[in-house]
Image (cartoon, rainbow, N blue to C red; front, side, top):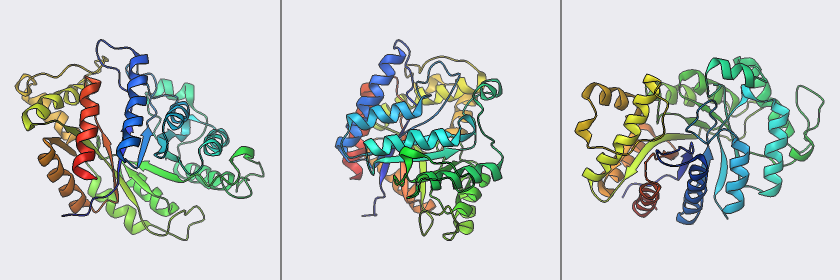
Length: 332
């Protein structure tokens, strides 16, 4: 039997048609509790803005609530979009979280704004330019270190000192992979929605990895890759549920801002639209437990990734919880 890598969960807190944002937040916390009980490695929350039907915008707040409701699972950001924030403030927030929940908090960092240009301008607090981003990451390692002082500025992080919060670099292209490698940090690959440069990004990250970098926190490359997962008792039922994320991706392309739609029969999704959705969401394990296991094992074998972070969109929260349960049964 193949060795199974750790499994984690990425949550964007989507709102389903007929439900409220409050409902979505409660579902998200319920999913975190289930993941904790079932043996998942970590649960991460994304950061998106000016998106009415996603509840993942105040990432640190979600992390704090989730950590309070769970017992052992790691909780983190997938990620904090650093250009939207003052880096010192990020150190203070995540340092506080780490004080409350020692050795359970992760800080995943990205350079994209997670929103449109107008909203990004309203949020902008630091530069997305690669060298500036690397400097901010370097300062964060100092603020989380023993002395608690930024490396490029003689400013204390106060509450963050000595918390040693692990840093991750998020990315979907060779650019993000190169930054992660040169900084000597673990890399979280957004293959669940941007598979186009997946293999090139993995090669670049591994070949550029520098364990001697001042920012390095690990001694060899470590990749966690995103994969879409919908598991149901039968392949036919899973394929029907899969039409919800397909239609979500089509809505993103067309600018049709609406909540997660109920599933339909697969043939009801026009072929051209289905092809587009699959081009974006093609890294997936959708089907019965046997089908999903084979897809997951094949993905790990062909990529050599060290961990999987799963993304599951369903209109009915009960279908998501069942998928989490079935995945745990077949993998752990």
